[in-house]
Amino acid sequence: MWCWMNGQYIQDHELVISPLDHGFLYGLGFFETFRTYDGIPFLFDEHFARLTEALATYRIAMPYSKETLLVVIEELNNRHGQVDGYFRLNVSAGNGGVGLQLKHYDAPTIIIFRKELPAVTAIKKAYWLTTIRNTPEQSKRFKSHHYANNILARQELTSLQEHEGFFVTETGNIAEGITSNIFWVIDGVLYTPSLETGILNGITRQAVIALAHANDIKVREGLFAKTVLEEAQECFVTTSVQELIAIASLDNRLFSTVEGPIYTLLSKCYKEQINGV
Image (cartoon, rainbow, N blue to C red):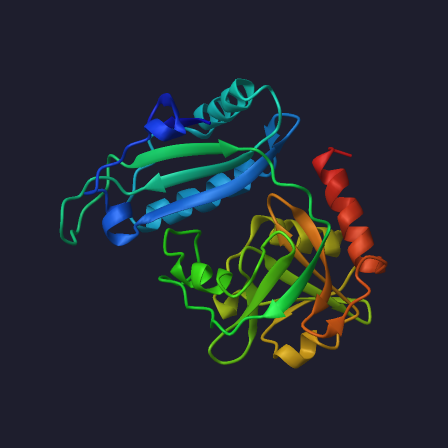
């Protein structure tokens, strides 16, 4: 597949980075995943802002403008037949030699990967994970290369296409999915874990909360034990690529999400936002 690396279009099998890149040596790198609709990346401003904040925190330069990256995304879609795709914008800190250094990273390795969109999954089954959600490396969680916790959790499931795993924190509070943010509904109120749990403030998560407020749906963010979610009538997860995904069951607990009024309304509003309605 065609990718783009540091200003050059290149096939994926030709990509090369230095083993002295601190993204490889120390996991110092950040990324954003998103998709395009009719060639336009949805909520790209928000993704780029979150990435920029992460890079600034760790003194990593971003030598390309948002406008330049948008042109690259368009061209990658063109090179793949002018169809929409799944994108990962990845920034690795760059060559810093062996050893931790107090410095600015002025020459990062920047790659935009594009692959085909996954098959649409409207409904998944969820399971409580035995792997405990780790805490972020800084005051808020970014999408970083430190992904071993998610990988360990992924090994608990037979399929991420059909299933999602739900993390709890070491204190037993509901956190997030392996690749998603979690929402549920009890008596018409929309619940979601607080950022205090150390979860990623997902871009789609933020959009759904805003849509809920715009539609006079009460939203409760907080610290919740597993038993709270197990009392829900509806449950769904959000991702930037697969949008709002209904959760049919959590272990042995069944939900009526697909017919649920809150999930139905928010899914409709989200699609309208995509379509610019």
